[in-house]
Length: 198
Image 1 (tube, rainbow, N blue to C red):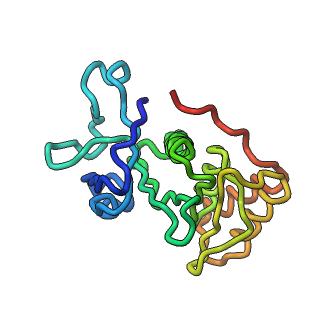
Image 2: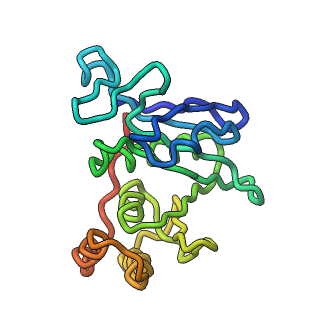
Image 3: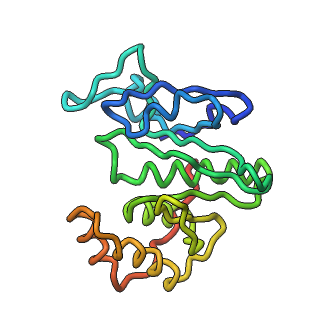
């Protein structure tokens, strides 16, 4: 897998993602956020980037063809903080860790660019857990729309991790898979941080 920053917010990068294969596809056409992507490298695809199986949405010249994408921008009130805004992974590649690796890559590039802190707000326990794998920790804060705010660097203590999961446990709108996931994590500490992508 190869990871790349397509452009910073001031560059106005746009990314055309197929809405049938990616959540939040329309958000990546907007040019007021920076963009980073994960793509199959030529070794993985036999020289044909973006090869799709028969079960997946076929790529076309109409769409860009990453495996995952992330949008980011600077905090409006704190020039030392950047926000990861949207993380999306191609439907058939979800659950394989590429989103966490891309979040780790993007946050490292933002830190290199001079941001002291990188934040993200998540609305489900799967994203919460994946961002912990990327080195984030729960701040104890929520946005106005019931998303939990995570930060890198952040508090990665077992008690803080469980307090975030408890926030999800209190919700009554969770799917059965989410409830099962939360039950499985009841006595666990945070996951190990994945290595930085190459």
